[in-house]
Image (tube, helix red, strand yellow):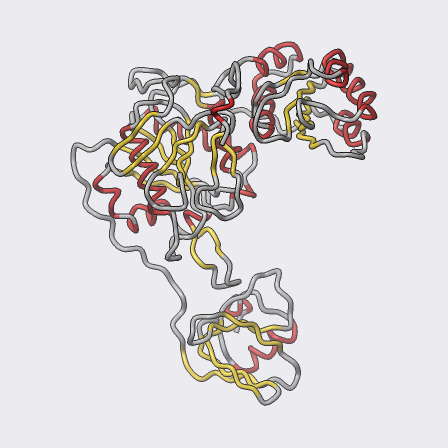
Length: 443
């Protein structure tokens, strides 16, 4: 029997399973210290230990049973291996707008991982379409899978590939594109494509879910339907993010890609527009614009693709006692820019000034944001802020630190010239900062 038939098992446990002649999917009985456990043998994570057998009980729960030299393992039958088979896609209705769903992974494209009992990216975009048949009433959907990764594994290289991939569909004349993405870094990706995809003729809508599709409380289907409806019919042509407005399945908010942040670890209404109004609301078949300042959909507009990003840019969150040597390290290792996430109106400790001055003299672009969620920086109020301005630190108004990081990566993907990079950073390209922040925009 090959080790591939006993995926993830090793050492003593692997030898015990081989001796019993069992393989993944078999129904087994384990007797240990006078206690008996029966269940289906399921694979283990390759990073798991070598002391436990994992079985799926009849109740549906997974348990791990520690194996010792005295543990007895028997094969008592062939079990049914866990699997998922998507139903056939619904028939398409002619005359509807054409929307492409591009899947990159994440919870919205996930199911239970029977190796570990956790959630893993498993569904293709085609599966998403087939398990949400309501989409056939909204648009003619083309499904495509680009990546199948959790969003914490997304890098700037993935942003570039996303931008190029979306651009290929936009150039084919689709009415909109939906990107299924994990929620943890979806805000970063939405900002990245806001800069990489300029002069859009149609909407590009990111969508995710906080709970996987096989859970009764899943928000996947509602979010996906809202995103596809926005891609097909919304009057704007920008990069946006579609998620629940509240914890109820009543409305979906569309947030601008450069002004949105994930604000809760698990709530379905985790995403909020920061220092700005959301773009629009989807309620049933109705789309209501929530701002008058947006780029209108225009099929004759020619997309400008600028998908390059430079990874040698840092985001440093200031805290009491921050070691300035961290700043020096980035400078000494050839980083082009540093975004500071300062306190309040835009401050860092004076003990960091010498390292910041050195960085700027070496043509490292240094910019300031605030670690406060709401409001904007004003470095003219206190001496500390004015001194930072005198050093050459660039204030970034009410730009989110995450958006600032992404923008600086994008800026240095376009140019390595310090002055041109500085000009681009201060240019409002995709509504990443506003002229003023109104109190009524706060929650």
